Length: 415
Image (cartoon, rainbow, N blue to C red; front, side, top):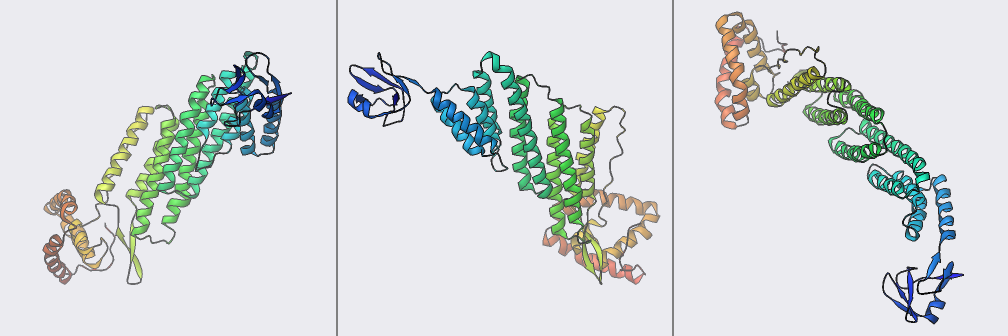
């Protein structure tokens, strides 16, 4: 027989009342004659007051076509067929299960559909008959595991190839979607997540350090004499690698032994940033020119010591090393005035510091006081013209006098 479909909304839920058929979805009414003209293929029972429709043949056909499309790797078409089944039978657990799989595998870095997929799997579990529940649960958890691993690997590979701050933000967002949805699903299904968590954190750590060693750090030294723009890029990308490492740490239990390695890797990156220099051309050669600001490097040292403390909390036998001493950058005021730590005037002043002042107790006291107060002074006023004007004339005269006494102005490495 045939079934009646509402011309206005496409619903098949029509009830015969007082000699007419009324659509229960949109309220449109049809006469008996109109209803006959609207009939389409399907099994219809029009006895009594309710139109009963047997859609089992259509559902079976759509399900077969969905499974065929999925097997042919046409996930979008498979999802469309599943949607057709769900329109007819919203409680069809097979359609929900297959739709979850099809939706999940259409994910890409621009749109992770893990939350959609898992929502479908939840519906499949809730609608499964008791004798099918164990099988559906096993299939769904296997699929969630595979989807999660694939998404994590895709995200980490993207960072390895493009370790930028902007890319990292989208990667962290995608990783958060995976973990926020998959872990509760595993737990509800009674799946032990230790192995999955270890895989996730280890994969993220490996990607971070691969990018650091093979992209970020190697690119910084690509020319052999990085400039200030290279240092800015190093700091941005190094910070991005650290952000991923901190995500890996957050995935684990706070006292996980794996976190010792991850904190150690953060220390490695921050230490490199603290000691990174830029260079400039001088007389046909290259001399050191610029580092990250003292405040920035001091903040990185604080982070390093925090990482050591957290390693100690995990492993009480760990010995926290002494706080790193920052390379002062030499003569702070002179460097600010002349624009570089490596220039003829500052080389002369550095020789005077090491060859004269550092040899006496009062000279060493002066150096200690100078290095204690001058970073703050330079941080406050070093960018102003009046500060540079005030010190320029005084330093020029001092440099000339020192050079007259034999302190050279050639490139110099601190003692």
